Image (cartoon, rainbow, N blue to C red; front, side, top):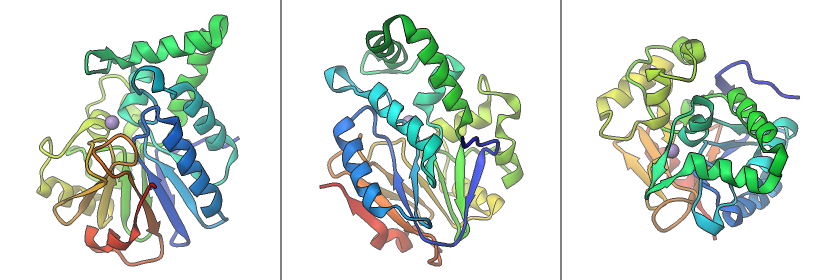
Length: 257
Ligand SMILES: [Mn+2]
């Protein structure tokens, strides 16, 4: 079984990486992405799921089914990478996440209870253990940095990212900023400083719902693969192409039918 000790994963300059963000319990979209991945995968190609695949709304919330599949693939499928999102962190750090009057942490626990009955406690423990295995971020040899959100203004080097869990999951301001910060919490200068500190050129995130993709200055791109406004986008990142600005990603953006 694969077990990530490292919290910063590094990908070599070979092949491509399919980057998918914020599924939020939408099983239909998840299946579509997995079909694309099944055609796309080979020994050099990667899949990166940047967190927040759980926590949807109402009857359409298939968080548990998606999580079971993500967990299985992470543990068994080569090159299937998953980073931690703030909605997964909520269960590890015992933080309530409330959206539109819904306590999504409690609703997820209810879904587990409905599905697994007396085994629900065991299942929740398994899921928390799985979330704790996940890396926080990924950097590619050609200079792309990928995480759920961020950057954190506290990060001064790659070393800081490798050791981001030294202060644990609870009350860790660096981890919080890497998983919660939106543009406005940080500015363009913070993005530049962060990228210089970690030796990367561009920064790819999800977390904030946008219309497909949105560029933040010249160095950051937000991608909404399912939970967003309008078109659902993902990236087919070329790991061998030279990257300088997010404009270099223009012809790597793909849309879900
Ligand atoms: Mn998020």
